[in-house]
Image (cartoon, rainbow, N blue to C red; front, top):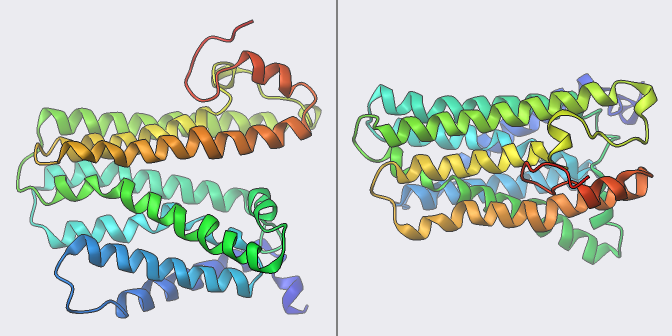
Length: 292
């Protein structure tokens, strides 16, 4: 079996992906300048270094879907690094780390479940690179890699305030932690409902419009958005976070409302004959009763 055939094997592709991520995270950390005092600047530089290396490997393997797990995997070392660098109560660490790690592991598992190997690339990336070579790599580097990394980095920033505050868990933090866990449960239920629907061959080219999907075209995205607002709520529960911090989850809201949801809708309109009617009568993101 030659190497190109091996890349079509899911287990082999996942193994290669894992090894790449271990190498990328390690080398990015070791390349960090030692003179940096700001912990968040250090994290941001590491985040960008790792993204650049992932980009190079995605070009090497001609598959930008290599970046997909980065969204959920990179926050793990970031929150752990913050936890190890600040002395805080076990209570606070559990309230913050439990939902974040649960989210990261769930989303990464979900990706691994759906990714079939290096022969499979996300349709959005294919569309973004369907142009001349220079523009394709510009879209690849900035649109697929750098900009999503910066969005995640900014959205994680509120975590710094709660982990760097020497305090015990307060009522606000408990509520924020429960809210964040609820968001993960919501997107998990939505994903499982869609997976069960798609497992039935009779539903091919049909629109899922039952259960949570009756009230929202993208309930899984709603859960993801709620998670990032939960991160913000945990940050402001420290009572030390500036008001401007609200921009962190709002950037994520903009991403889903104006980019992710429309791209998925556009694809569904091409692939499902009944999607136009569903789209006309069903809320884009938030859970509302259908119009008819």
